[in-house]
Length: 332
Ligand code: ACO
Image (tube, rainbow, N blue to C red; front, side):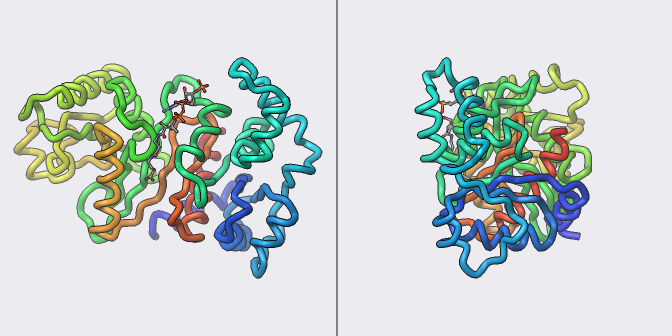
């Protein structure tokens, strides 16, 4: 069974409520129709009656809960929560109301924060930064986690590497330049993501252009120190570095460049040293190897919120909603 079909089955087994704030985009309704028909999640769509009528024509979204942000009996509760969370940052009831009406992603995050939804998916017509910022400001990180990062679950066809072609790549979405502390934490959080979605043990490689001291540069030192931190802070984590990509995934190269490493040659969870490397890396594999790229999936948030690419298809929204629902099951 393909990775995403297993995720659909998991999502259906314990249905969660996911909020979709992009009522201004037709793809939301195409996705909603399929999600509702197949029973992948319960849905809340945020939008005015005019927005919904204009953009949902031709789609059957019976069963979705519609929340009109200008006429919602729960709105004051969300305004109060917004002010409670961001009052010290200057958010007054007037600013909260205006922000929620202008940007439904704030509304969606407040619904999650108040327990009225289990997760949110946005980004089909908003930038990554605009999708992530409300979640960072309102939902914050899980206890014990200091930094949110973003991964792609890569499914490479006909591939003997990773877990039969399945990998987690991180950070591909959030932090332009992770510190060594963030990189170490990203290794542990990514391993958890891999294990919860794929159901197999994560083997984490800290990537560089150097393997075990073969090159010297400040950027190599950062990855070496991040690896040591990850080993010290997460003693149960199977992690090694610094490794070049070929040493990380190919057994013969791994044995030659990093002999004795418990990860080299078998890595299925790849931690990139910068956002540039991670973002370019996943797109190379997606395009050249025709790999499935599910994400970016955010990890480390207290509640699951996920981003979409603006070039996404309705089918991608369905997949991201299912992944978000499974993350919500694990967040309980
Ligand atoms: N983890 C946890 N909290 C964070 C993180 C993080 N990684 N980054 C920022 N925050 C918090 C801040 O502490 C701040 O909290 P506060 O307001 O309570 O003090 C809040 O989030 C806002 O932070 P800012 O730095 O003011 O927000 P900013 O909008 O400048 O940056 C953002 C955050 C949006 C994530 C930024 O780092 C960014 O734009 N990253 C790149 C996103 C991107 O374009 N990715 C590539 C495209 S994705 C793709 O191709 C699929």
